[in-house]
Image (cartoon, rainbow, N blue to C red; front, side):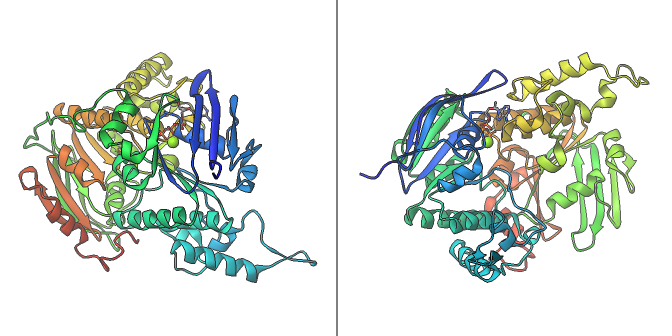
Length: 511
Ligand SMILES: Nc1ncnc2c1ncn2[C@@H]1O[C@H](COP(=O)(O)OP(=O)(O)OP(=O)(O)O)[C@@H](O)[C@H]1O
Ligand SMILES: [Mg+2]
């Protein structure tokens, strides 16, 4: 009988005195897709970081294909045939595909020690063919879509003959077509004998793709078994420890006639064209579209991060012209960006500092004070963190980098909530967020709207928008192609509008 691909024996890990993993004993059979689910901070990435040699466990041991596995660093894990495709991609954008594939060392021409570029190009080409990425090996990585970059990472794993490939939330920024493409590649790799670990908050996808399921809660293994033993409901119960009947809270807010944000003819040539709409007091307005449809670009212009060449933006009766984010914040706007790592957070700063940043004006000792009231910051930071169930060991000392992916996302939201925004723009607010916390975020949106704020919510999840919004705008190719009131919500028509004006319908995710 072949030995397990991976065996964990009593693996534990603490950070700052907080248990991230407690006595995990788990085997992963070979040539299977193993889905790992759990709430934000449950320990999924930490377990994989231990396997990948990035984190050293406090106790326990591992074996990899029957051999003791005690990696001193990621290079040891690579040598043991383990490849890790992280939650945030890990490539050098300004280097070519082939340079990225051989970043650890190009093949050499034997005696001379010269780099064998020809061999490297051939191997790179072959690896790209295997993963179905048909572009020249010298293409710069920064010119690839996120999906293509992910394929390059998988190609790197394939090129190194990895026997175990860990995919940590690989689908969170992919379009449906791209997801399907990734899934068929995962099946091909599994059928070729590879073991794959698939971590995701999309439970339907985990159930569809995995052969076995592993559920973690608060650092403990709650259950594991063949996928036939699981349903999405059971996964949720095991993850959360209780049944969650409704994924969405009932809508409590009602939009009024008062307009908070009026956008007329806003244009940035080649990016967005002639965008006009109004956001009302108490309204949750959805902005649906495929990736690359111009939704994020529109949000950036509204918030003053990018300029527009024509059109008008009026926020709470105040025209915003050539405005900067500081003016937007002053006018009552807040913007939760989709790219939390690069734009949303200061990764090395503390949780408390990050929360306080956008609301320094509100947290200053007095209106004219240049001193910051640290106690006020701490109290408020703890309050919003509690509302969002942000899981952290120490708000003052723990840096944002050390939070789990989903908790980083909650931190970005917490930061903006402290500014008491009148107009809140959310870009993919629930990406990477677990089911329970999603519910909290929808509730917060509801409460803010019920309190008179207007919310513009960008999402690629149509179901999430139809459940939470009063109205949905559909963007495609930089234009608004549909405006649906709640009574007219119809997923088919909305998808149809999302594909309007595209160059090719075959690859809607391409930029
Ligand atoms: N380097 C670190 N330093 C301190 N704490 C850490 C570190 N890495 C992880 N943690 C903590 O360990 C716990 C588990 O985090 P982990 O990243 O494994 O969660 P996760 O299950 O991957 O969550 P998510 O779904 O949000 O990605 C969290 O409480 C996190 O804050
Ligand atoms: Mg994680």
